[in-house]
Length: 292
Image 1 (cartoon, rainbow, N blue to C red):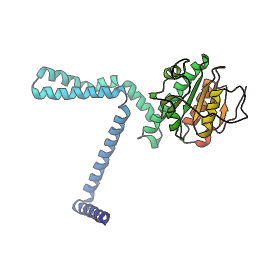
Image 2 (cartoon, rainbow, N blue to C red):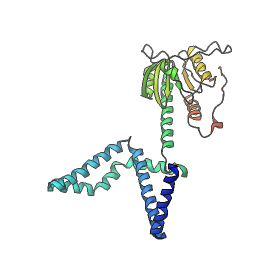
Image 3 (tube, one colour):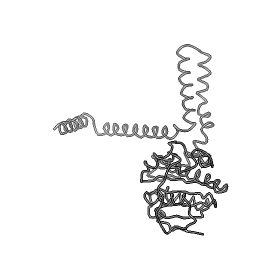
Image 4 (cartoon, rainbow, N blue to C red):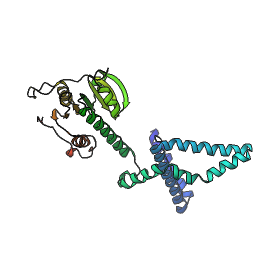
């Protein structure tokens, strides 16, 4: 009943407003509301886009200058007020010089975006983070392959791996190649076990994984490969393995294993499974074990 009364009052207000205003003034009011809404939305998106970059710090510095100029003018500091006003007058040129990389990157993003994504940066931000994650993993794995450093990296997807994360040491760190290499360096506290990555973060290291019970596996596969297959059999995680004995790079997915990957083929495998979310038919299916 309260909802019906509220709805009736609302439409009565709209009817009275349309009666008191002519069509032209009502249309001007609608245009003003739309105009303010669009400007507010664009400003919100711009602030959200730059708040985690160095541009955010520069903008805060500019606001300090503007406030200081107004305060010095009110207090009566003529010399300081003159200098600050002069600085503000040349602020447009200063902004172009300081924000040149950000302007160029923003225009490039705008040019690459589809029409439906012109006012949304979340999807592109997510894509950039995943691409960065893939490159950091590839750099780390390539180096560990060269030095015959064993590694086991689990990338969580839809199936949550909370129990696996709780079995290790919580980190919640940004993914960098240097950190991954340091974790798996022999004789360090966290090198034995798996690293679990969730939402582009290293959630935990030294995690325990279930071993596969597949009796048809090659005898040359060690514990790391069996653990990688084990977690891929009970979840949709994608697992990257570096063999300590041979330095070979492998990927486990959906209970299957692909071995002897190069940095290029690893990039392709990770990209197909972590980036192609809109085209599930293009994702890699169950892989067969390839022994060479």
